[in-house]
Image 1 (cartoon, rainbow, N blue to C red):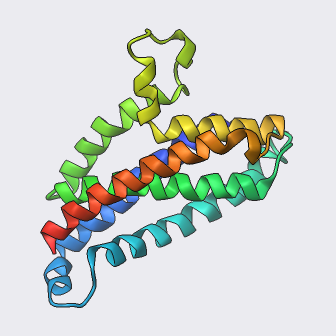
Image 2 (image 1 turned 60 degrees about the vertical axis):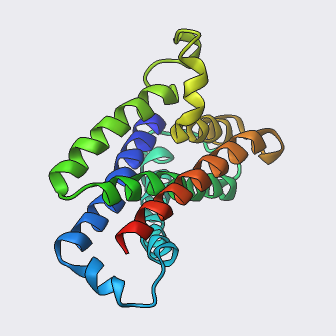
Length: 193
C-alpha cells in the first residue's frame, strides 16, 4: 500500500508541473511573462507551491483515510517528519517536472519525456527491485533517484518510528538533488523568459 502511494505520487509530481508549464506555453502566457517583472525563480516557486499543496492534501487523505483505517498499517513515527520529507520530495521532483516542461513543446513531448525519466527513477529507487539485488555497477546510480531517499525515509518513519537523527543523510541527499535540479531548471527557464 505504501509503495503504491509513493509511486502514484511520483507520477503526479512529475507530470503536473510539466503539463502546467507546457499549457502556459501553448496559451501564450510565457510571452506575457516576458514583459512582467516576474523572474524564473518566482515562476517556478509558484508552480511548486501549488503542486506541493495538492500532493500534501492527497498524502494526508491517503494516510488517514486509506493506509491507517483500511490497510491497517500502523504509523509508528512522526507524521510531521514524514510531511517534511514529502515537501522536500515534492520540491525535488517538481524540479524534474518543470525541467521536462521547459524542454517540451507540447503535451506529447511531456508524456514521452516523463516516461523516459520516470522509469529509471522508479527502477533505481528500489521500489521495484531491491537495491541489494542490482548489479554492483548500477547501485551508485540509485543515489540519482529522489524516490530512493523518499522511500527509505518513509518506510523508516512509518514502519519503524525512526527519527531525524538517523534519517538526516536521506534529507541531505534529497535536498541536494532538489537544489541541483532547481538550478538547472531555473537556467533553462531563464532562456525561455
